[in-house]
Length: 177
Image (cartoon, one colour):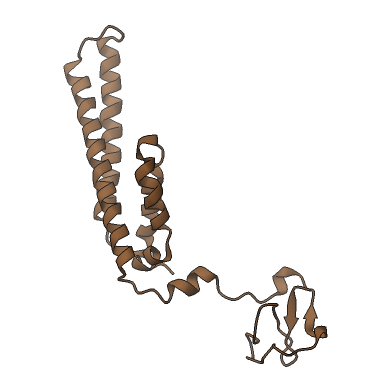
């Protein structure tokens, strides 16, 4: 038995339903014959819990604001680190410092790779830093946090940020329900 059939309109509701979703008829004092087994796709499912909860949360809530603030700090920090990587790459490519293990040509190639990767990732994090608070930017935030999670050094910052980023209050702050 996985559902209760409404005697008034024949809609199969979840066993936990207290009233029929279609007609509002009370399902509390029905005989045991009202309980039926049907395939799961024929059951009426109410809205998902998370969307029902976040409809009650205001857009401008404190937890969402604080999480967004720390996300912006995180993006600024990573943009700075990637700008530093770009600078190191330019120094390697231009100055070609001598080292015992690599030739000057290898230093130029490594320097160019560092400079390009540093510039690309710095640009990505700088753009993410200044994006407006829109529903689609919540997804951008997940991607930026995931990029930071590729380094073990950032795990102490990215794991709590990700936990707070997934909370309904943060979703509501970005307008996602």
